Amino acid sequence: MVCLETDFIIALMRKDESALKKLQELVSKGERLSTTPITASELFRGAYSSERVDENLKKVRGILSRLDLLEFNTIASDIYGQTSSDLERKGEPIGDFDALIASIALAHNERVVTRNIKHFSRVKGLEVEKF
View 1 (spheres, helix red, strand yellow):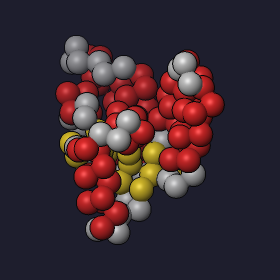
View 2 (cartoon, one colour):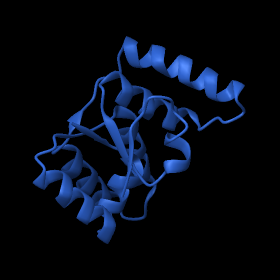
View 3 (cartoon, helix red, strand yellow):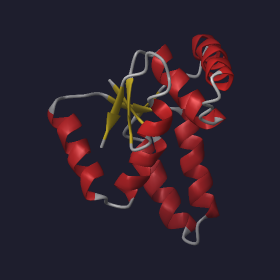
């Protein structure tokens, strides 16, 4: 299974060539696709903040209906606490939402597909795949 991060899903909604190609590659390999409740929340916030609310809500709901939503559980919470603290101590914070997404993916042993390699590659043990 592979966890699709916010940047990737937004790129899909915008019909970005590299995102569409990556999706096709993942599907052809039979990958099970997932995302996190954090990404879902970011997508809904973006839709509600947009000028075309109804159109964007339809896109968000359509995409999310095709993905497994990973559970944000105690294991992910523990990983988040450790990861955020470690990154802050190093002076390399990545922001709470990205740290939460990474922690949920780690808790479920999934790699993350994103353009934001700068942030996600800082998370120890997280496999990151760029599109």
